[in-house]
Length: 306
Image 1 (cartoon, helix red, strand yellow):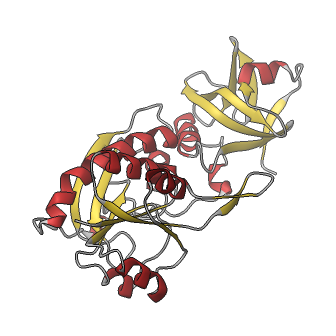
Image 2 (tube, rainbow, N blue to C red; image 1 turned 90 degrees about the vertical axis):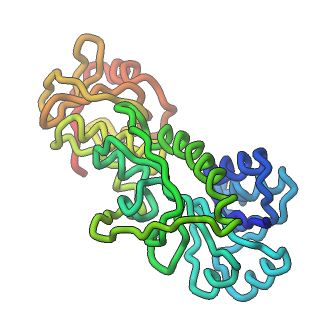
């Protein structure tokens, strides 16, 4: 068994590391090219590229799997590929190039939440359950036949980052269970029911903006789903504020107003309020919300729509 691993971000790197530690024969890695990172735009390899280098696995960096890349892959006599957040669309020639195909690990229970951001959208939507799905890639968007899946409950206070960490480890267990079956051609494929499909489109910064005209539980879900990426935030009369931690409470503060109540910073929502726990005002470091609010010296603070 000779396997190609394709992935880019940190959760994919964790998956690669755990698969290799479990004895999985990864012969080649595909990842996206180095990119500028941080304010100084330092050119930095992907997390998967760094992990492949640590593990001594050959690595190809590319944004397209074309004939040239396929020729490089062919020299490694790959049987099939595992894809975890690679971020590159695979066309028909690539899908047909490996004897047993390409298999993607997706962080939802397909066909629910097809797309680039299933973890964030599960929390945005207030879902109580999600999971991981391993499927064989076809030319659609997360539409291929299912090989295996595993459900898990979403915890009430869980952020997208925390949920993704759990799903990453759950995904490794699904892979380790099914890779021998794929190799032995013993997989039982289950067709997805397209009538139950929902989407999870890629997020932009605007998707993290908090809308306090909604009930507090929905504002909280948006904040948790947007952390750590793309980040939860709101504009206020004292500047833009990034929300790193919060929770819904039943105490009612007028919608769009921020008040210190019993030592807690509350932002009023349509129903209930959101207690701000940790914030990062524009141009400053993260801090406790109470420290930030007291530092405003009794200024009136309101959410603004600008």
